[in-house]
Length: 143
Image 1 (spheres, helix red, strand yellow):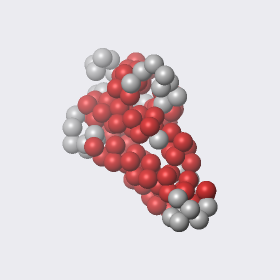
Image 2 (spheres, one colour):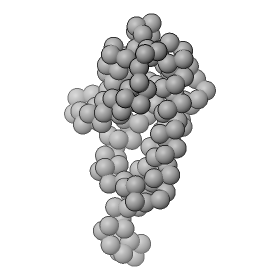
Image 3 (cartoon, one colour):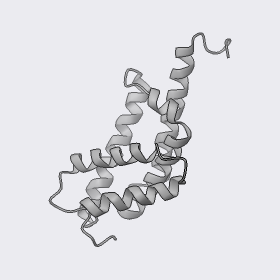
Image 4 (cartoon, one colour):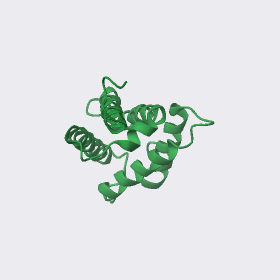
């Protein structure tokens, strides 16, 4: 480790970048632009929770000061914006919602769910997150 990383900070930065790349791959693996929005919402949630649970420390260290981390997070953000827009257009999310606010609530639900790793799998937590989001922001047609 000492030969590859000169400092602890260099090691943490490398782990954070690696975790951020896994995070982006998890989002891409859900095919959020290709599958029906409700399917994409659930699969994205499950995939992201898998990364956040497994790489929580590294994800918490990801800083926007690192240009590559910032770029990856910006791309994931745009993907999420498109997914929420598609979900609203498909009638999964209510038409009267502020999608930026709804997305921030979704992120908060994921952040909280990632802390509850003792008793539930990423899939079970994803079900709780999506169900909670749709009960507050959904049209009821997806439930």
